[in-house]
Image 1 (tube, rainbow, N blue to C red):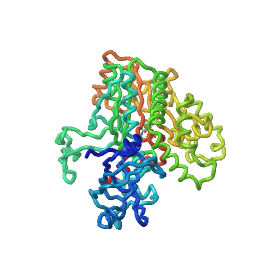
Image 2 (image 1 turned 120 degrees about the vertical axis):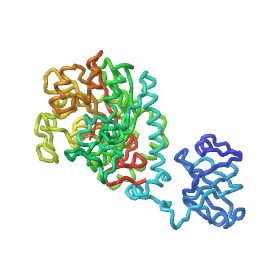
Image 3 (image 1 turned 90 degrees about the vertical axis):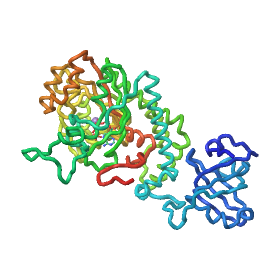
Image 4 (image 1 turned 180 degrees about the horizontal axis):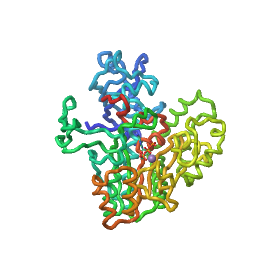
Length: 478
Ligand code: ATP
Ligand code: MN
């Protein structure tokens, strides 16, 4: 008999049908004559309740039916008064894989997220992490759908790269040299000409520079790939390995870029609202449960309400300089409540400042533009004031920066001057400069941190809970 998935069964509610289901036991409740088994196969949040008659199956089988065990059950679907409208009266039960109830780490109770992080290899088997996994999948699909509908091409940019122009000391080196005993040049330095690629190589921190090459031929491209940053920031917003989506568009200025970023984020959120209802409802309840002991004014907006709010409202757009003045005049600044003081033009905004603007001042997502040139990357277009660059950061509640982007400097001379000033090796970047030598055009793009998006959409508070196997300083399990 062919197996049916629980999602399908709960949707069809085909009373009277005989079906076969496979899955893992979440809970078992024993009463005198029957056992109630909650079976989950991951296709949907909800469990299917199996009713097993003790007289038919006996202790021989039922004692192996424990939380975590894998079962295959054939039975008849009947109407139910329980959580679902249908349940399964078991006719055959096969225990496919046992789980020793004394050793299985996931007990049928609420576990803390910290504990689940320690057993991340099993956390898919919880409601929270299976819900996140399904939402994550939907968001991956929606990213490709959005760009495909708009005529963008997906480009695979390299993961191993020899350019460290962007990395600024935050890169993971890739090498096959013997670290204990590397080949050395006469001056004692390591001889990378003997390394695998004949030069020093790293894991990529962004696919942008290569993305630009493609955009300046294909018009509209996007990348969606893994990104690696060895920044030593042990925060709830940073991972050492994360996924980034980077669209890049030719013939596109900063305004078009902002429009696309806003439309994109709203599209993704609406997609989640339409396609992930069951999981979002659950995640919303989870969040409320977790926050129930917090004072009222520190609780988050209800998850679905929050998502609708962002999808339905225009983002605020303002310049960095305007933001600095709002921040300097703010209550926390005047009472000395910011950990990092806002000195004035040139201050690099911290997450606390970004969140103040979004959560307290505007109460809406904010797009900040025109940052001081010296706190931003070399490739950003210099504005007419010669002080600022055409950068944009999209700031979200709870997250802070979710997108960072810019219009790129397309003028060869300006770019070269900037690179020299910032000590970017021109020779190594010759390939990049070729785009400015031949048929250069105004172009723009941005990077969306995929896990920051998922953090926002799921209402989780720690980015390590929205990627299955998080990598962060001193942590690379599994
Ligand atoms: P932040 O200031 O928050 O560290 P950034 O300015 O270094 O971010 P960008 O280089 O602009 O980030 O990267 C684009 C996007 O990638 C960011 O807006 C963010 O969503 C995401 N991102 C950056 N660093 C990380 C990280 N370590 N872990 C997860 N996402 C990240
Ligand atoms: Mn940024």
